Image (tube, rainbow over all chains, first blue to last red; front, side, top):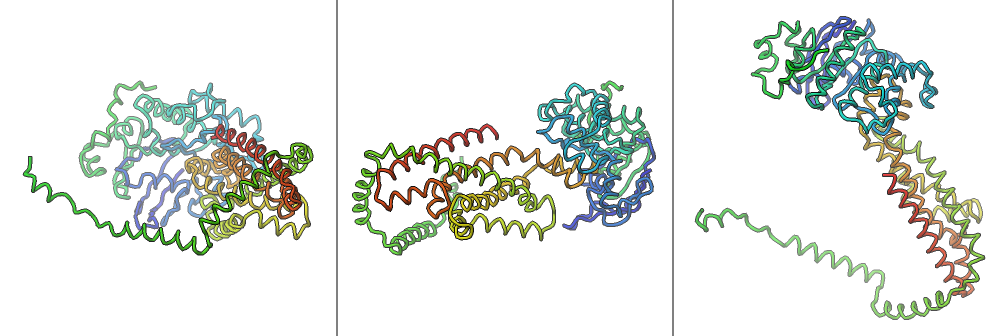
Length: 261
Length: 266
């Protein structure tokens, strides 16, 4: 479904964030990307929906080239790829439902979206998305009235409203407290299982990655150094990815006590 | 404890004060030469004060209260000029601000052009524009209104593009990732973020415009100042006094209301 072919990214300031990374993602997988900060995790994720332009290589999403895509074609590809962010990126002054309906934008003409003339089915899709992350009752609240965990669930609902095939999550729990971290990760896992939605998640906490994902990708200094099953990750692999022992900040620590839904 | 002499060696040397004294000297020289250049004299000032006091007495003790009734219409015109000028200026400011914001179009040539264009609007005082338009369109309130439209669009657009450039880029990125077009990004990620600020800029320029429009009549561009001109040239100081009082009260009142609303907005 997603083929990443020898991509490299060098930023204008000369920093090489990715070098010659190749991997394939199959439908329905839950894949976590781990590595030190600055290893290129965010760059890799953002290259997939072209928020960042890769400098070499190409990415094929359902057979279509991301590198060549632009204009309407790119917008239609992006429509099929949801994304959630560390800082949620909601429009705080707008209502929750307005934020979620943003996920429907690429389905309509500029005229329809500009005046907010979303059809009834779209509202239904938005409400269902909110219900799926258990936050339907907040639909008419302003986004800035919510807590961090609630905001992230609204952000997930927004990307679900896109009815995507792939969901990218860039450090989705890094701004959350331990309890809401578990809730949000459980949400992602449930969505992956129930909808068969493919997940590609950047995670700082190694043990969270091991618990929730079926497959782990390890990046180190822009290079792919591990790609395998979560159960095959051992201390040697982690040493290869991190170049040292894990620090306490990289271990979430409460995974075993967490309720698994 | 260390021995005292060792500690005093650690204290860094006090930097020289010459720079500071030179700056003060330069400042005094500047003020002095400016006074010299404009032929400022204390004696003139004191004599002028005496004359001014006499003038004030003629203006306000007592003002011609009966004349106020005839001032209501021109005062209304002044307020209308500023409302209409602010309204249309603020509307023209929207596309100008959008085209000037570096983070939206990301086309340096276009944004650069519009930024310079706006600079031109703001550096020329609205009174100059009013005089210019009065000679083009003829006397009356229209040139005054046009002058305020130009000034307001320059001011609100400038404040507006700065507001756009300081928004949280997160929602923009999120909407891009949803496949939204530029127009949708503007509508759903940018406008909601800057709307309260924009309204506050509109009110702020209204406050400036109401003060500006009170003098527009001086160059024949409509409103109350027309009467100011007229009464002064007929030496009707008591009538001029009532104009000053009315202008003061109206401007203060509108200013107060507008700034109260602005406080609420932000």
